[in-house]
Amino acid sequence: MIGFSVLTAFASATPPPDDFYVDVRGYLPQGYVIDGSVDYKPHIQKCFDENPHVIFPGSDDPTKPMVYGVTGAKEDGILKTRPKARIRFGPNAVLKRLPSFGDLFELGHGTHLTGAVIDGNKYAHWPLVRDRPVKPYAFVIGHAVTLRGGNVIRDCFVYNNAGIAIGGWYASDNRIYRSRVENCGFLEALREPVWAGEHASADGFFFYRESHYNIVKDSEAIDCARWGFVVEGGSAYNTFVDCRGGDVHVRTFGFIDVESAGPGNSLVRCRSPNSDLSVQSYFQDAVGCTARKIWAEHASYPRFLGCTSVGGWFRFGEVREDRFVTPGRESPMLGHNRFLLGGVSSDHSLTVICADGRGLATNNVLYGSADGDRRSTEMLLFGVGSRSGNIQSGDGGKEPIGQFARPYYLRARTDDGFKRSE
Image (cartoon, rainbow, N blue to C red; front, side):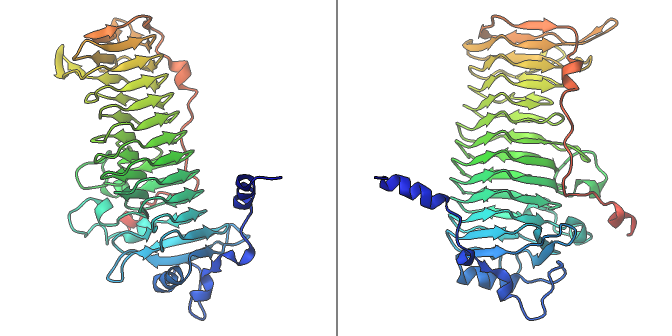
């Protein structure tokens, strides 16, 4: 006899019937067009309000997608689902932001979102964004997708969004799988090489203000003008597994930023060949990760195991001109890491300054470089309690660096024409 738990498992794996989802087109006005030119937010909102399960049908022809136009938050509010809704997008179905300020799409608590493709349409927002109030873009344009907790996002794609792609404030227990974000922020509009001040505060995946126990897996963040993956504001016990990212057309702040966060956030096999990883809080883990540079000057009790830098330093504490600029913190644990400097520079180094004398730095390899009389800075392990098995090599690690391919766009594009046309 098959047990009840087994029958339940079979039932949960069975695809829903054809009439499980309500076709959103049934709520659009007569003579509707699905080319992204008309704002149908009131009609889509009515569909969400009246139905827990909604589908956005797509197209069999990828060159002729079905594009549903909506505006962001105005006086009529954000496009918002009810709690525990199920929202599905068919192949080649796109939700397109029409020029507007505010968040675009908010998921009710417990809502599942599958297959969504969201075009942030940021170039249509110029000069609207140029003339905005003096605030970071993320707080003017807002999120493409806002999480409210207990949400599940699968196989979704956000691109060309001026603000944050997918994020939550006070949003816990979310699960994000196989999703990708590209070209978020308006950095290129300002003719500046890197993010600064209020110019381009746009992130890919963003957890802030006590957002706990979230998981992001098998996801990518490309050219997000601030950071690709962010944990800040006391958020704790979040996990990122097999996430990827990097820079294509703009120089971002970096790949992952764990800063002013609570304890217990974990990075597992997260990889970027050309942007930085920053872990600046206490009791954080990074295992098998790869980044251009690894920053941890303000971390306490971090663990970096089996990580690789491809072209830059690792800093746990900072030294400049033989002076401690950033003092050491407590009890770092560094084991079996590789640091491939890729060039001669006095800034390139493995620097570990331990404040309590109980840190561990063992079996790490620093691939330095030499150019005539110039050599890379050697390892600095100050106040570390255990330091066995560390090796410094002089070949620079250039061959391993070449094994990491640059990231690339799947859907996003850069467009400077809006600047030249002014």
